[in-house]
Length: 128
Length: 265
Image 1: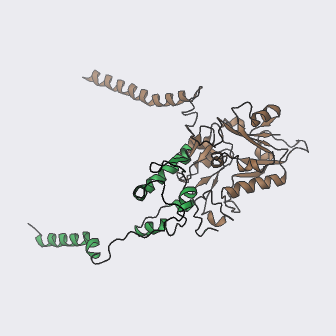
Image 2: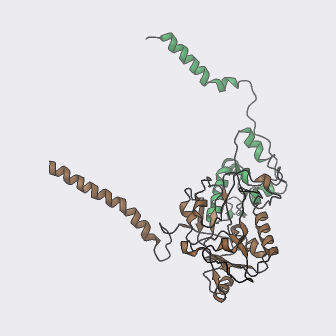
Image 3: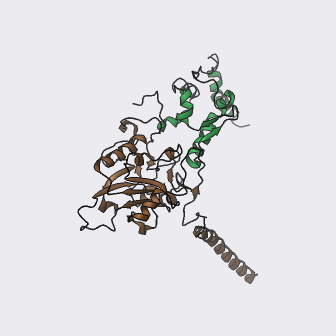
């Protein structure tokens, strides 16, 4: 095999570089789910906690299409069989009053930056 | 072999021509007559599934009585529309507006002349005409602007990419573009309605969000009877009664856009 040493050195550099995130994090604290502010005036969300945790982004995307494009404003919950209005600002924010203590906590921890609030108004935010 | 190859090419050419013509002929055919209003000549329409309280119509339309429009009403109407929809107040050529006052000769370029009676209205309100055949909807590449079954030409601000084709397509100048972040220019934000982001086109939506809650458009409510709103397909509706009694005109009807805002003059 020609240039055996060069290849081995190259491979070693590659492996070190690829595994950098793993060994760099050795010893640092494990990921902790952020502590969210729970709504004071309600016990149950429109769906189960597990469902909301995993699917809220897809659900909100569907809501916006159904409301804006289909004029379909009512959400029939499969968990409580209640009817809710499909609205971020009229339904979600009525219970989860504080965006900074609810939405932003997880979004900041997992470094996602949804653009909902570019247009939708956070009542407790920095808007006048 | 030579003749075979020539025959093959001929057949292939005719077939290609046929396939090229077929979709176009289908599109054109779908536009004609009946209830099927889809195809090249008409924009496709979205169904509206509304709740029990919603106001419904098969074709929403508006009638503006120019004689009843006083200066105060005009100010009230523009203010209520722009405050409930968080329309920013940006002076200059980056100005945004959903409904605004403009002179009669600007509104009716083609049928207004300098010898009109002194007593007649000098100006009236302009807004999106919610055309039956909206050019903005046909040119929108992302279908961000679309037409509902009840005729309302809607904006999906989420989907607008800010190409401004619709602004070029609209012959009435009813659309405004957000050249910059509008939030610093909104005096007081109405929490029940979103603001817009930079790079999005906006316009009047006949208060679709209020109709869904069973309320009349906000301009109609404060207009002291100068603006009437209702179902153009219902002969018993207020708008149809007004149109049957009084002489009315529309803005540039010869363009074929079929505007649904009527002016009583």
